[in-house]
Length: 263
Image (cartoon, rainbow, N blue to C red; front, side, top):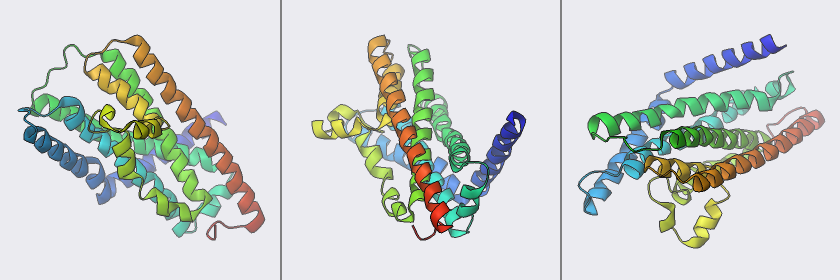
């Protein structure tokens, strides 16, 4: 059973990577769009009087934006394609749970989105000549891993949300920019109104991103980092719990009606 499960994971990831590579939309999501956002951030930074672009919010922020945009659209487009092609019922009815399939897909999509962040770090190093001396390396690594975990939990949640109801796709399409706005992808979140900061506190990405930004700026405040890491893990687990509940609802619905296209 374990061998078959690893075989499923390997095969699913291989197919998903192939789909992402061959799809021109992926180029726009993971490369072109982050570059555009970074360029705009640099222009605004120079207009504000900064001679060099800000490492954390202009360069790295563009990479994070690429990761998030790629995750939102790839995870939702996958499940929408299954519903459109009549595959969703077969997936739900198969011995392998929908949650596992979406978990593997989303994990692959998150790894694909990591390409945007790698490009951002390369641009910071080779184009703008940034030196990462003084950076809290371990803080960056832990924060990045938790950021990936947070994005994965949100991606799985969104995919199952669309499986639960096709009408949910109407709302998911509008998540890209609001989440980027209230989580401070390309600027310090402290510039937002307090009430918006409270709203963003319910999103795990915000906490992991703040911890990574502080680590990139050289902060070694273990208390600050630990609190943000703990909040990331807690909120991600809450999303996973909600996703599990939704999956039960999906299975109950298909047992009664035999299809999901009308939900």
